[in-house]
Structures are given as structure tokens and as C-alpha cells.
Image (cartoon, rainbow, N blue to C red; front, side, top):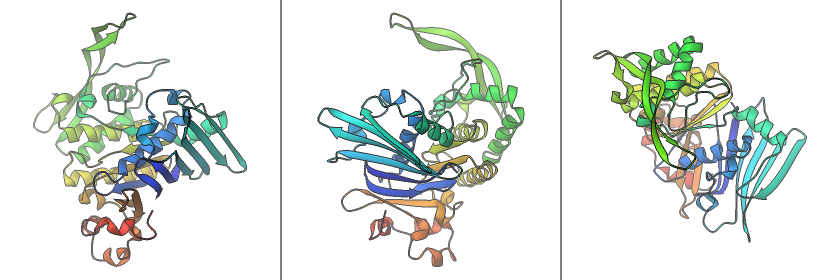
Length: 368
């Protein structure tokens, strides 16, 4: 488990929120209470491991700095075997914004700052972050049905096939898995069948498709490319193009591919874990994810959900309840901290208890 706690100060709606994390953690609560912001903040810090990434447009200070504040901080308390602390911050200055990074591991520590949009953390900080998040950083998934279904190129050598945060490249990644890690490919398909019982198999076929290329003059052209396309065999129909499969089937396939195929360590961040899945499928998916995490200690999943059926598969310690205080800032506490949690769990499931509980208790005295 790479991260044991994330702390957000003046990040969007978070004035000061501490979120303890376990290998499998789910954030719940009404819309617009800061759940997704926790995922975004973790992803933002993970990007420090990759030189130059902060020079792009991904960090827009005016969109993440809480209104009326001059400084934000996001810190990660790291779990064994990488105990330590990494903090990223943005300060508003007279000339714009300044980014800073601080880290601590054992007796070693360091800090540095630079005007945005550029900040290149020192090698020790990048090494620590790479150890926690892996070479690809936190996998912040925003999977999209059309992107998951699209055919994709297969690249080898210095360039490797990759899965984007929206799911584009899935066919290529599964093609590589089939060629070089067939047991992993078979495991992904087996687990997909457990989540979506109507699936009989998944195949990768050669495909020619059109892609947009921009030439040296900045003009877009449509060209044909060779690659791979997914076909799914269902109980009722075989050789179905991925674009004709259900959204839930493709979302489950994309998520299972990420947790099985990508190298450890990795932190996977996923919004709406239940999206487009039947309640039984939601439960089966959590069961499979839990088993995968148990066998791979370097894997950690942090997700959001609105489904009490999915929450049933979590303990009260794994559920973080988010709510807004009267001043509009976010509070977050473990469901196990509810005053009646121990008594209620003798009679209810976790999802039932959550559904029967108002969120106001989270923002009370002693709230996060």
C-alpha cells in the first residue's frame, strides 16, 4: 500500500481535510462535496515524479486554489516500505504563482520552489515518488466507452503501447498482453466473465483504421493505420465489435486490465466505480479487486461511488464519508467513526448503514 494518508489544505473545497487510506478505499457522499478532488490531488502530486509534466496546462492554479486563499498544500504520508512524506504546494505571489515541493524520508529531507508553470523536483524527491507511484505515476482513470472500444496501434521498441486515462489504447494493450503475458490476458478475461456472466471470451483481431495526423504545416490529415481491435463473444452472439458492447462491460474490462497488466507499484484512482454495472456485478468487481490487491501489496485503489450495493463489499474503515460544512468546505471521516457504527453493524450491512445515515455528522465537531 503506497499511501496511508492524504492531506489537502485550501485545495478546491478542502480547507483542511485529512483522508486516511487503506489498500482499498472508497469515498462516498453527495455530489460536489470534494470526493473527486481527493483523487485529483493525489494524481497532481504523483506528476512530480515525471520531469517537465508541470510545464503543461494540467495545473491551473486559479481552478484548484480555494477562493480567497493564497496558498494550497497537498501532502502524502507514505506507507512502508517507503515511509516518508511528500508535499506539493502552490503560492500566489505578486508576479503570478510559485510551486513548491518538499519531501522527507528518515533523516533525509529537502524542499525547493520555482515560479509556475515549471517545477523540476530534485532527484531524491522524484526517486521517492517513482518508488511509490511507479514509472507511470498514479493511474487517474476517466474511462470512456467510445475510447475503450476504439481500435488502436501496437507500438514496440522504444515506444510502447499504453492505455490513456480515458481508455484509448485498450485493444493494443490487450494485444500485447495476449502475445507476451498470455496468463495475465486469460486472468483478465476470466474475471470479466465473473463480472459480466454473458461474456464468453475476448479476442484481439487485426484492424485498419483511420487516425488524424497533423503535418509540419499544422494541417490535419486522415490517414490509415494498422493496429488491433477488440471483439467480444457473448452467450447470445459471437464476434461482437467492442463498440457494440455495453458500457459496463467495457468499463470493467478497462479497469481489470489496469490492475492486472500494469507494473507495480501503482495507485489507481477511479471515479464512480459502480458506473453502468448491475448491483451483483458491482459486488463481484469489488471482490475481484480485493483479491488482486491482497496478492499484490504494491497496488492501491482509491475510488468514489454513490452505490450502497457496492459499499456493502467494504468495511466501515474502508469507507470515507464526505460532506460540506456550513461554510461550504469539505469534511471527511471514516464511516467507522460514526457514533453508532459499532452497534449498527451488528444489524446492518455497510451499505444499509450508509443509506440510513445522514452525512451531517461528518461536519460536526472533530470532523475532518
